Length: 193
Length: 193
Image (cartoon, rainbow over all chains, first blue to last red; front, side):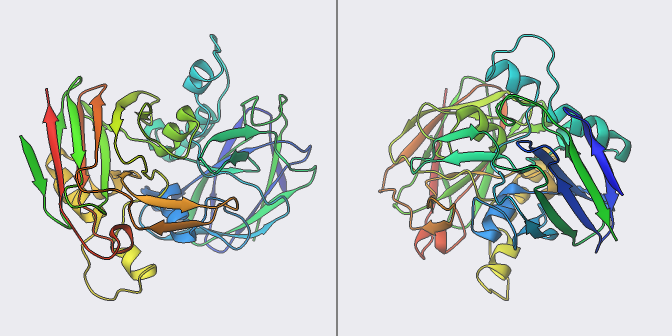
């Protein structure tokens, strides 16, 4: 059953070892931030530093694994029809909009949408790690300068993940203008047994 | 007073807001992993994802700030005589040597040297974030492929940091062969009021 994450919102759910998760961009040019926790011990969680180290790449796509802070495999990426994801940048937060967008009032954020959905699993805001930013198009030059560019995904593009342990998953339809080329769309996901 | 971190070991100490920390490579080609925590609430800590986001760069050097998971400035880098540091890779751990070096027996690691020294401050292994890897020479190509190359620092090269809040600092003399061009040396540090 395909489930919908409304624009600028999020979801959290369990995924059993061996189950697959399909994350779909139904309307193109959208980003989804994903965080992962060991379902049996939430102190074990997704680590960008361990993943980039073991996979020996900044760019993580089909064939790569997502690793935990305890050096365990959390997921394998079985398919990636778009091919561009980011694992450098933290989820957009209220401060992202204050500091980088000079936004003065309330703005939805992936950070809030992650921690508010993950709260039912005992996960607090400080526990949210750097997310695997599905479809996010962060470009870098040879000097390391970063720019957040419009996502390259077309309507229907998806990534397919396989859980390597029992997981709690947090997932968003991203709230940041720069990540989505100025507009906001939903994200679809499907859990496949 | 200059203090010495012996090869393949670590240290942890408090640094007050406004104090400066000088981290020196006394014998060239050495790396020092540094992690930071809010001294008054250890759930606030160094974040690579927030730092790369706010500083808009993979390469962090003089003029940049190190940011926390709560989007606060922890340190400013006042000086960097070498100019190459890494903030992509997690500290080397026992699993680094098993998985990447195919090492079968005990090997010292920055991860162990960080958590064992930070234990007196109530910080546990799972709390150790991706470190700011001073002097570490991680090269990347346009496809994102990473390689750990010999450090470029000369004897006496240093970074000078200023604390922007009261901090607990964990610091190592790195234990990984690839990071140090195959040999191990000490790291010196100095707290300046």
